[in-house]
Amino acid sequence: MDKQINKTNLTNKDNSDIITPMNSSSRMLRIEEKRTRKQLIYVIGGSVGIILLVIFLGIPLLIKFSVIVGNMKSGNNIIEQTDKTPPFPPILSSLNSATNSASLKIDGYAEPETTLKLFLNDKEVKKTLLSQDGSFSFTDLTLKPGENQIYATTMDVSNNESSASAILKINYIKDAPKLEVTEPQDGQSFDKNHQEISISGKTDAGNNVWVNGRFVVVKDDGSFTMKLRLNDGENLLTISSKDPAGNETKIEKKVIFAP
Image 1 (tube, one colour):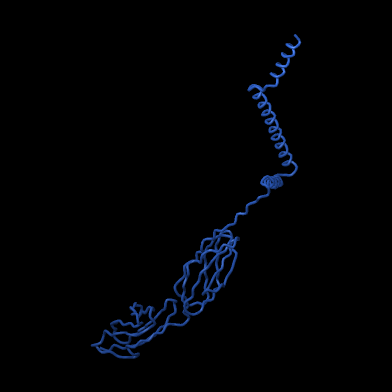
Image 2 (tube, rainbow, N blue to C red; image 1 turned 90 degrees about the vertical axis):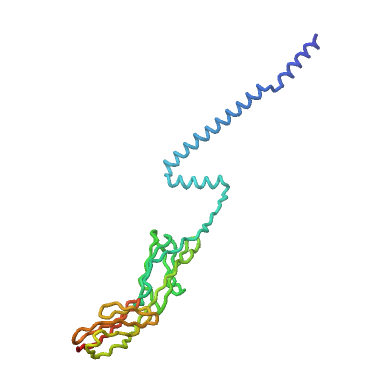
């Protein structure tokens, strides 16, 4: 009889140690509840901490604190991103093809807050830090006689340099143009058979010529000629030549028409 009771107790003890699917689910549920409660406590505590920080430290210090915490979470592995994109090329305002002044003003626009370098005949002559609107203006460039070339580049804070701007060319002409009138001669008289006379001469190629305000075509070699009908008596002839820079030379001659 005792053996049978002991056997029964042993069987019951063994059955109590068996983990059934129901027991396993209950245990996992209890673990999940504990985890949820712990997360809720963290959230509430964090919210209270943020409120206290705002009250006692203010928003600026809170932002700094958040940055510090963010760095700690990332293990201080800050990835430095380097700007390798160059600024766009500067834009220079257009110029006349020629000037008779050695001093030149030039304007333009480039990427704001970059350092602009201006080159005259391949030599750096100006350097300035641009403002937020990116505009610039220089009023005291000194040109050399003949052709001058102007361009600009910019560089940002990461030392990225832009391509050069479009090259502007301007011809500085300081001397008045040459002008020669070969006919008629000053003081020459014409009879009734020569009321219409030829006015001929030569100037620098590319110049414009006028005779008494009338435009005269100048050939590629600088020569010109035109016909002019005289009035009775004394006629004043004004021949002028003007170059692209605005320099001008005038010659006056008097001829007489005596029919």
